[in-house]
Structure formats: C-alpha cells, structure tokens
Length: 307
Image (cartoon, rainbow, N blue to C red):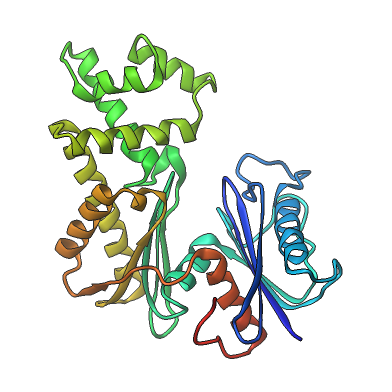
C-alpha cells in the first residue's frame, strides 16, 4: 500500500495526518511547535516537531516505525523558502515545505482556487487564481501587522487605553485590561509585557475578553471588534486583487473564528467588501490540506473525499 502524509506545523503545536491513496486517514499525530521564529541556526525545533508528529501518527496507525511515504507535505508557520535551523529529515520519496497559509488554503477550499483569511493569534490572507497566480498578504507578525488577529485586537485596545490615560480620559477597555491581566495600572501591563512576564499569547487572549464585553453591549468593545473584522476583510480583498481574482470562493479560519460574534462581524465585513464572492465553510483542516498538497506533489489524483 502507498502512504501519504500531511503536516501542519504551527506556533503552538504540530499535527500530522497519514492517509492511503484512497484518501482514508489512518491516524493523526501531534507534537510541539514547529515555527523557527526566534530560533538560531542550531535549532532543531522544526526538524523535531515534524518528525515527532509524524512518528506519533505512524505509531497510532500501527505501521512500522520505518514506514516510507510516497510524498509528505508540511505547512510551516512563517516558512519563507528556507530552513534556518536543522533541516527536516522525513521518510518520503518527495518532501514539500510551504508557508502554512498554503496548506490551510488547500484544506479550506479542498485544493480549489479562491481566497482564505486566517485570524488566530496573528493573521494572514492567501489567494490562488484558476491560473495558479498566488498572493500572500499579512503575516508580518505582532510588531508590524497581523490586522484583525487576536493580538492586533488586544494591542489596539490597549494602545487606545494608554493614549486615553495620557490624555486624562477614562477608557472602558482599559478597565477591562486591568482586571484581565490582574495588574494595578496600564503602565504595569506594559512593563510586564516588555519584561516577558506577559507573553504574546496572553496578550492575544485579551481579545476574548473584548469580544465578550462586546456581546454584553460594551460600545467601545464592539467598535474594536468591528474594526478588526473590517481590517481582516480588507486584507482578503487586497490578496484577491494581487492574485487577479475578481470573484470566487472565500473561507475564513483560525482561532478567532471560534467566536460566533467575531465570525459574524467578519462575515458582515466580507459581504460589504467583497459582495461578489461566495463565503464558504472550510472543508478540511490544515493537516488535510497538507495531505492534498502531498497527493499533488506525488502526481496522483486527489481523492474526492478525505476522511
């Protein structure tokens, strides 16, 4: 039997899926983060995460530890065409590494053309036309971009609260921040972040508090939520324009979409920004998206259904 594997390597965890040529998923495996953000050339983080997730899936499938694959595709967060640390060592005739938006796109749209916007801790948009023209926008990280993401939503709210504090004005979101981070002042929050006591993920988690406040009728919170939704829609529109797409399917995924309130605001923003597009639910997760890329890499037909 011929086997294929797809791996989704993220900033918090890595997931691998093993399937046969008919699209039957035999098992899934998991491991730690795979991105190389902040890593040195001596880092084995990427290599180890991909290998560990795959080995976990192989073991769960009851396959021999030395199983060889026809093709393995891996989407890696932040990948830009080169590996900075130890190179992955994967048991396959053909190995493909791509930016994680590509496998997320392949999964969400089942390998078809269209556009995807991802909003989690960070954000990015990726579009692929019928002719194969692609455009990747966003993904600049928490310092330079990530519009519409969890971190962006929290950062914008905190920045506004800090500006109001300097102006001697009250800010509803500032009060929520003090409670959320359990700090006596906004300055203490800033100091804790710069000192590494509050992580990026913890700042991004504040977006959940903002969304909940919006659901309770907090006007400032709802304004922040809508601003984030429109920023994400604008990113998707720009990606479509650069890929030469005027209409077609668009899917939105990522942790922020787990909130029905935020997802609803994003849907409204997309209808306004891209009325000619068809909003679709993601069909497969990113690991299966990598499987689709693995089938294509091997030059075999992609199964009509993968499960």
